[in-house]
Length: 182
Image (cartoon, rainbow, N blue to C red; front, side, top):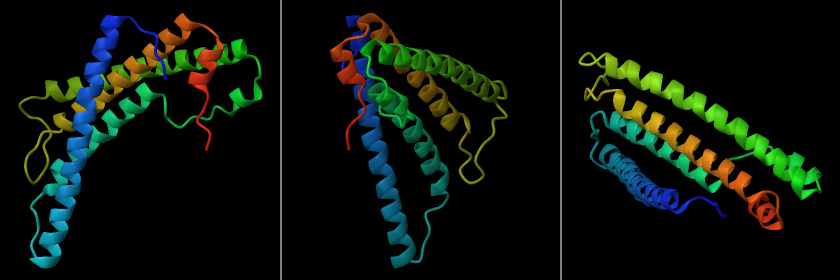
């Protein structure tokens, strides 16, 4: 996949990707280890890890939304783009994909706005934040992960639209946009 974006933004994207890759790897390992540890405690020692669901669920929210942002960058989200397989003309395909990306960007902006409202509602209730029952963890933590995921998804979709408009229809563009063959 080739994104034709300016170098300063390209450096930012690379830094963000590295951070997300490390975070996703570490968070996935933590969750796997916790579930393994819970099984060992429960079935070998007849014990329980108190309220682990609360913080593991918060990690899961972050993994889900940061993973969705990775999918936006890699352009690997599930799509119903069978229409492109019916179109032979590269320019027409480019127009359809560009319009689709524009709609995705607009939806992304709305989602970022709603995420911001959700986050600000939580912040404005400080110090009376909603908290989990067992450990008292603030709901701000997963809500911030949701908001950040929406921001990154909208950002990457905007980069795809920019790159598509900058490159225009070409054979190279068609190869980049072609769905993977299974």
